[in-house]
Length: 357
Image (cartoon, rainbow, N blue to C red; front, top):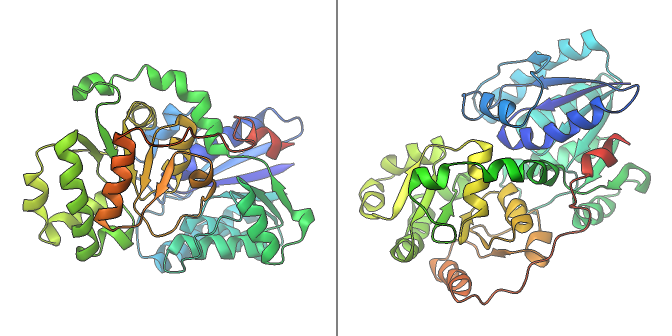
């Protein structure tokens, strides 16, 4: 069975790594890897392939950045000849980036079985480009593999037949558990002069937060208070770095002496940084999952989450962008007032094996 697996952006790499390994170990399975090049700089791409032991892509489309329409169209144009040449039995896509829906559309229109890993997640916020990608990919997929029960429930509610839906656990957690010991060897804490549990980690990249000066300003109101308590390590996304001066926020950010902006970190360094943090403040989806497994308190600065299990059983507090609510959540962390987080069902490091089976 020939399967083309597609990786497009940084969050995809952590999901593709265990799948490629599981497929390589499956007799009669011929896996091919296509990297669309949606994230294309060295730190966001090549470094991840090396650290996670992902084989070099069989095909690199080298798409690069662009508007949603341009990126989606370019991926479709470049991916179609690859499918026609290799004639796979199935195309597997992961997550919710533009490459996911673009390659999914190509496969389905050519009559190829489409497999979606991380299916059924819903924020119920259609202003998020990822939500549109998730809804459309799930609607055209033949096999849908879910990370949590909410994904199964959402797909059933949308009329997807039960025989297409499988609850298998979370491939991103497979990668985390496999690399935990390796990440412990990272020297990043020493390089940054940090002690375990004595600092916060911040990530901010969602357009709804970093493209809106009023909302970004509100987030800074909260961060100004937190950074008086402990250093905030901020691996800064290129989009966010560009927006700070453009929105006239550079002086405010510079005045926060304990907010330390660093370049985006490789997977192992970031895993170490997260695992030893006192608290993580984020608007990312995947980080909500990683902190749940690491049992590190997470404050999610968004109005919604497509990963509700992280707030139901894990260490995640979903607080929106109101500084008062962010600081209330932070105080609960500082006071040790959080309940003991649990690990969601099937987040055990074997999701990719179940998918391969």
